[in-house]
Image 1 (cartoon, rainbow, N blue to C red):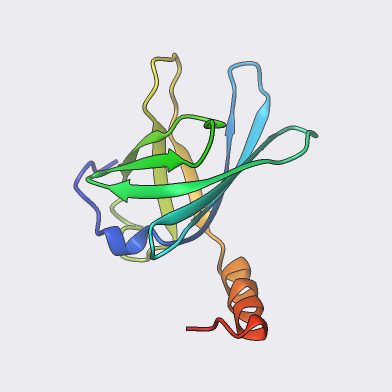
Image 2 (cartoon, rainbow, N blue to C red):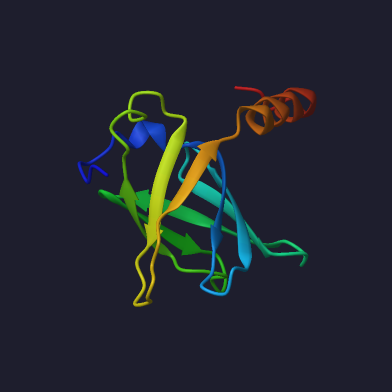
Length: 129
């Protein structure tokens, strides 16, 4: 993986992915990074209900999350690029910066369907940019 600094323009959008724990349990993640630097993060494990948080994000080569309340997961992520996908803007590879072994990266894919649904919701509400 390439650790070069990606273009921050690729970050805003809806992103989904999963990561597996050392015992095989799956954790599903959804991120919505908005252009105004607000975010929503949702996480669930296996068959449990979604937990969510909102806050603001910043980027300096890493993604920093500042939740409005108590964080539901790590708030500092290293951002990586896979050279062959770097130009597409369709994959984001992040790794939580925590002291844990193993600390595997999470591959997120851009959710264009959810983005289109959100545009329609904003349009109906009269908030379409």
